[in-house]
Amino acid sequence: MSERLDRIGLFFALFVFLLLGSLNLSLPGLHYDEAREAGLNAMEFLRGLPITAFRNAQLRIGSVSIPLMVQDYIGALNVFLAIPFLGAFGIRVEALRLFTLSVGAGTIFLTWSLARKLGGPLAGFGTAILLAFNPSFVFWSRQGIFVTNIVPLFLVASLLCALRWREKCNPRDLYCLALLWGLGVYSKAIFLWAILAMVLLALVLPNRRLPPPKELAFALIAFLLPLTPLLLFNALTGGTILAVAQNLRFSYYGINNLALGANLAARLKQLVTLLRGDHLWYLGGIFSNPVAPWVAGGFVLVTLLLALAGRAQWRALLPAGIIGFIVVESAFTISGLFITHYFLLLPLLAISGGVGFGLLLKKSSSSRILKALAVVAFILWASRDLYITALYHRALAATGGHSSHSDAVYELAHHLLSWKGNPVIALDWGIDAPLRFLTLGEVKPVEIFGYESFHAPDPGFRERASLFLNPGTIFIAHGPEDTVFKGRVEALESLAEEKGLKLEEIAHFRERSGRLLYIILQLR
Image (cartoon, rainbow, N blue to C red; front, side):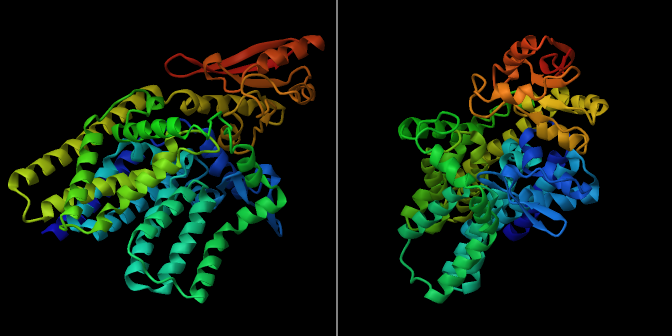
């Protein structure tokens, strides 16, 4: 019966996830990271346009250009995987998100498989439901490139390979593990957290003999093979090495990496927030599942107690152990303490809950009252998650998204098509890549704001802006509340006055709430 329920749970979970994930798929608006880290290069490839490669690092094979990376620590894997979806369904936001929803569905299946292996069929059932109903998983999978949602898929797949290799010592499983580790690091460097956590846990577990040198050599080759573009990128630009070296003490976003205690406290709060789901404000509301952290913690505690009593295998605590190591490791960052990094943890959180739930129901020695409490707790967690996912959908349909996630970007892109072929200058972050993708490369904003300083223009801003101080040139800026790189509009106004020109507002675009988001300025 549990086997049948297990499979029914998987198919039901996938059905609900794909239904929730595909509703109003164009909402929220296309985010900069979605366009920059996949959509733009995929669109350029399909249309035969010059590739806008990060740091201009690309590999040329005949007439074809292949970008090596999309950021210093993010590979171009999403670009390659998005191309078939854009080719099949058109160069549209919905097609881009169908790709990431497919990744999400694949992650649910692999997570279900891993949970079954760790805790049995009922664990698989519980895990699939918890992950599919989770609002963070649903909405981050819709915008999966925004959070590089292929990384947790590689994590769960590598855990499956690692367990199989540990059980059977088959070299093919070792090579598969190494290949997945390489793909994970290439997709996003934070996968190194997962690798380190897995290695540390392996050291804690009972010793196994090391593979022979020949197998280790082949495993190293399998690991390095997907990292070839990353290695070539650094040979050409040194970008990743430079990014790490410059941000070791203080990260780009001002995080003090020596303040590990404060950083860890912030990360623990984010873990609770992730379970509650009340961080998706940009969808149009804030909705919370206060039950989730308590139930999740309770199921982990139950698993620990059963393991201590010898009534459950210690490997049932594997997901919780990896979560613990990753949370500690994530107190160090070269970017910021972003909750989006914890998309990596969502499958592990679901497995931890599902395994605890499954073990309680599976053990015949568990009292009826305890089993009933486990069922009630599970239903409260899952049903509340499903409810707030529905609430977020309702809010999103009304607001269209806020700030850098607003659907106002679609209206802006349509308006700017009348300016194609003319200089269009971006005075802030978040403008360039979405407009290029949405206009199929017809509008090509030039970013001149400079990334060196958030609070004021860098010394080179004046020189960059002077190249475009011609009557008729248009500039795009954000409204004051959404400006990331500040002071650029004011500096441009001063430069224009020196040239006898005036910077005038000719159009603006607002969120559905009426909040000012984009301003179009023109030199006259």
